[in-house]
Structures are given as C-alpha cells and as structure tokens.
Image (cartoon, rainbow, N blue to C red; front, side, top):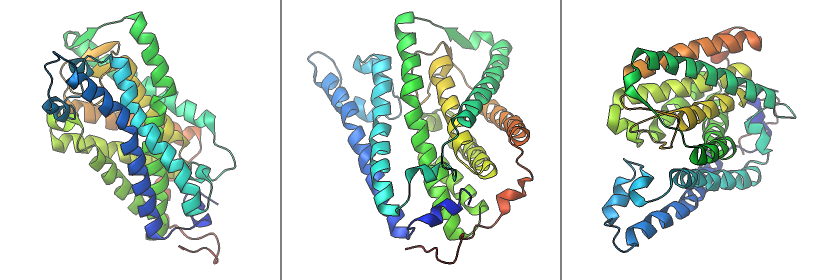
Length: 320
C-alpha cells in the first residue's frame, strides 16, 4: 500500500476535511494570542508612541524592534501560532478520519528520519552554494553581524521550534490535502497542481509579495509547492519534503535573511536587495539538481509516476 492509498484506510467524506481544516484554523488563531498580547502590551506602554495602526501594519512589516521585542522572542511568538495549529491537527485527525496521524507521512510502519535528515543536509548545502555565488557577485549587498548571545538562542529555536512550522505546512499540503484530493480525483497530477497553487495562495499575504511583486513571488511559491509535491509522490512519502522545507526556512532564519522577508531574525548575513527573478531561477535550478540526486539515491524510476492513477487497495474502501 502506497502513500495515497494510505488515505483509503480511513473515512474520507468531503465534510470531514472541512471540519478538520476549521479546527486547524481555530488552533492557529489560538496560537496567535501570545503574539497579539505582546504587541498590544507594547502599544499600551506609556510613552511608546505606538498605535493600533502599527499592529495592523505589522502584517506587511513584521519588525519586532518597532515594538521593543527581542528578535528571538518575536520569532518564537510567530512560531507558537503553528504549535497551536499542529496540536489541533494532531488531536482532531484520528477521531475524524479513523486512521493514524503517521499515515500522512508514510505508508510504512515507521517514519524514515534518515531520509528527512539527508534531504535537509543536501538542500541546505545546495542553497548555501547558490547564496555564496550571489555573495561573490555582489558582496556589497550583504552585511554581516554576529552576536553570540543572540545567535546561539536563534540556532536552538531554529532547530527545535522552527521545524514545527515547516512540518505543519507539509502535513497539511503535501500530506493531508494531497492525499484527500488524490483519492477523490483518482490520480496524482491533480493533487500535485491543486496543492501547489494553494501553497502559493497561503503565501499571498507574505510581505515578499508586496516587496517584490505578486507574479514573480507566486511563481516562486508555486514552484516550491511543485518541488515538494514531486518529491512526495516520487518517494511515496513525506520525509524528503519535510527535510527540504525545514532546510529552506532554517537557512533563511540562521544564515542569510533579507530585508522585507516574512521571517525577520538576526541571521549571520542580511541581503539588502533581492533580485526575485534570479532567486526564482536559482531555486528552479537547485530543485532540478536536488531531484536528480534523490532519484539516484532512492532509485525512484520514471517520473511517469506523477501521472499514475490512484485506486482503492480493495473493494471495501469507501469515502464515508
């Protein structure tokens, strides 16, 4: 039984997916409470000079320094939202779908952590190579700043808490929705396209969209969704996608951030100007290299697998 067929083990009526997503959204909203309390506390401090408009503008400029909040604390507050969402997702999934949460990750009895770590290391290495090329092409565009007292906590947060955010997105899009759309569409290419477009859609409110333009950034996000979906389908599991997504955000949080990014941390380097076209082309090239490495490392076979049909493992499976 494969990754998509995993979903046939449980109950999959469309309304069950709707209920789960509503509960996940509620968990996400509850997770926002610590962040909002911290922002309102700063606004209400005497002499702060801040207004409610600053909170409204925070969405397009997530700079915690304006509110007098330490960057690492602010980073953690942002991640708490995803802890709330993942907690809600975990507890509602099995009662609603009558199957194990692990089935969103793998059809095997155990999650392959080695695959996840391997994908993380390979993608991180490739990403840093591309960033190094960009740096040597224009070193004046980068500034270096290192403070041990803030860098060590940042690394710890990025290793322990940041993967919750990236895993939450992967579990929802490449796990939950991809399986759900796959068993309803009875194929693999439709869920690949649908989840990639939806992945771009949820990032439409990111500050990068306003900073660099809707068209090019949506191309970037949808391309990212396609890559993550392709590796999930070809590898018949979510481990590689989990590793790639974690490595992407880890690199942005710890090594190289940029002005206008959704994640604002005291990374080692900050790029002050970004060419979104170069960034997107670089991402696509790295994605192709990554796919080639994974194909030979895990003996994937033909990419025709992306166009395969999805069928129930037996006649007793239903969409109850």
